[in-house]
Image 1 (cartoon, rainbow, N blue to C red):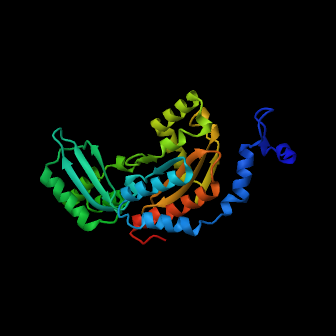
Image 2 (image 1 turned 60 degrees about the horizontal axis):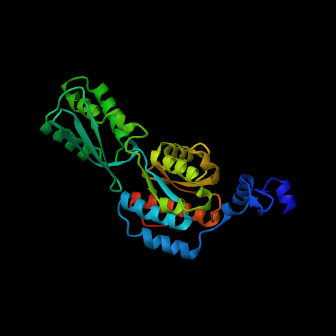
Image 3 (image 1 turned 60 degrees about the vertical axis):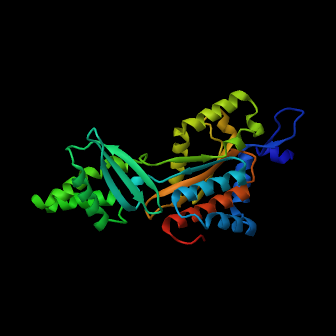
Length: 300
């Protein structure tokens, strides 16, 4: 014990207390042991049973959030991919009374999102229907980004009256649909679990943490950063950037894919004291399950 304390892996909060792991101690355990763990047969069977019947993104997210919260006794977080980078199954344009256009996108996997845009020119509903029909017949399975690129190329090639369709489609497939935050939603489950953790017995620390959860922006930034890491599963120990109380938290995250170019991430935000082996293996396997649901494949 003394050697571990000297190495910075344990500390004693006060003289009458036992020794507890430091952030370095948790990191050492995760890197040496937890990251090498394998999902138990019972957990794999339970997760497959829960996920096998899911047929849409929203349903997969709901089931995955329930599983993550139950396994970790923490907060389940699932950040969806930006809608502009998802393969489109169907698109529709609806004229609203003030002249703006509501763009409704149904992506592969059954995910539906919409965005209200103001266009450079006024459209009539029959015209909008015609453009949507053209896109649905010719570009189903393309992303909004790819559609915009193709329409811009067509516009350069067809510098005459034949380019009107490309021009109008480019206007309606607005570049703002490609913003990383457009349609990117954060799903949260398990707040009741984390607020009873001993680490947040102090009302001030709990209030600050709940404010960070409610605000969401900092959680979205955290999960977005996890998408950029080279590892399929990442573990962060101590999250002071979301709140002072965040120093007592760990974040386990795993990437999933909705199409080849649209990663999202799911994760667990919980106290430093958690079952890391089970949490890491569950997150990794669930990411595979959500990816399979979105691609129409069977659960691995």
